[in-house]
Image (cartoon, rainbow, N blue to C red):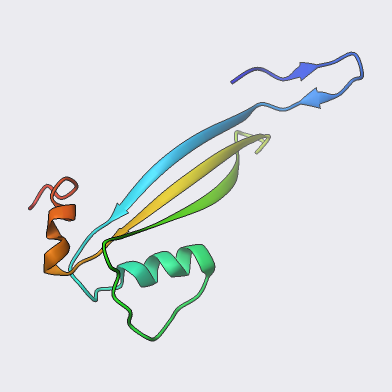
Length: 100
């Protein structure tokens, strides 16, 4: 990314960083993987259990102010992968689980 630049019109463009992060949530069925992600993304909790089928992918955009004076903005796109926990989906866990 570039440094702050001033144009002839005295407009100032601030330096901005952009990152993409992939978070994969795997585990046994009915342990709260989907509930955790729903709580993080939509601030909701659903009491009814509906199992995930295959993979559910959600994108959450975050903006953080960083630096000594919090003067720099960082954009983070978080891709949240919720992989089903039922035994028939264990083949989806294998590439990400070092214990499989």
